[in-house]
Length: 545
Picture (cartoon, rainbow, N blue to C red):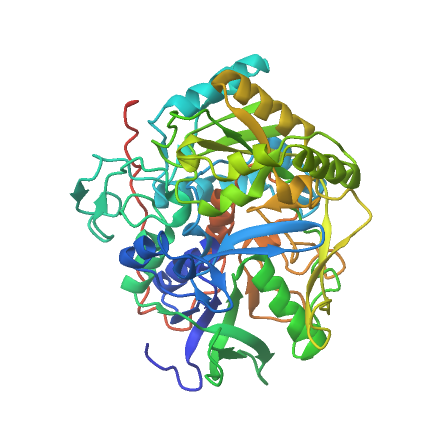
């Protein structure tokens, strides 16, 4: 990367998930010098294959160098991915657009932007860039979901999902089919059901095969294993960004940039802003609404285990969905390689009172311990397992504050707090109804996740909000151009800014918002290095297989 006098980069982007990857590509194309700082590792296809056999290569945490993490708060558990490509590593590749109810939400309407009209072209471009096609696969698991939808009177809403997967010819590698030869070569989907483990086979359109690949090709630098510890405004403008290695001590560095884009995911962005405002005092003007309006997409995860001999594993992780009612959306999930699921499922129990539900589940486990042992030790467990994700427009909110850790009281950590409304549901009756209908259709055993049924937690991969858009610092952390109120040149371009519940998988919406953000970003002083923004041609929709 060339140096720009007192600056190490025009723009530092913190994080390389959906928001950060888009910002990196589009701002590099505009002629900015871009440096992306990612706390996780860069994973090769060989690394992803090794992670399937070695938990230390799969899990992110103390003593581990993988990419999959789970953080447990008092009111929710959140799963995600760390590494170059962010959440796209562990993403199932579903590209659903928000519906009209999202755009009608008062929190969005009040911003004075016609979001449906403004986002439309960016949703289209994001879909092309991520290689959206209709899933051509309809296997036994999809058929069971169709029959469950029919039993619930909702068969008309059942269908294949739009997917970010290069189906091509299974296992056949070909030159870049998306970007006119500018992108990497790709290999047709093997239908192995392993999307959530990172795709080492060249089929899933994770960000390292589109936005990030192209950003680096066009001059952006991506620096792995670099965690941002503080941001400090500089006299006369710009920011000093202090970094450290996420697990090695002593490797602190400082970079200076004219502008900074935060795209570290809800937890990363909100925690960094909290530390800079409340502990370090370097960003004193960040809105008092920081950490508020956090949503989980109000989802529940349930499961069905098929009888011995059944094999539902063939296909992409998610290939079909339906709407049990107008406010609810369900997808099926294959989870090949998800070895930790064995210890996370138990009897299906309905009860809106979390404590009573936990007692009932524990009572059932104590009464029939051999039944649970048989479940945990079941042969071909993952080939027989269907995980169902049910999301709802049930609008609950939480806040994330920086408070003393109950385990390490000398340190302050992010902790969840109720904010007057309804807490995210750990028991979603319609999710259990869908699960029973699927089990009835397939002859399997319906199950709940123990984290929800015993722990009373809402478990989500779709965390939103915490640094939401508002008309002023009294309403939100950023304006409708994603700039942080009170700190010019500091932006947020990830799921933190979304002020309302999507009710569907959010990756396409996050990508489209980042496309819109980048299109409104200030031009560089010198546009000599600017190039025409790349777009992908629509991927071919294949005939059903």
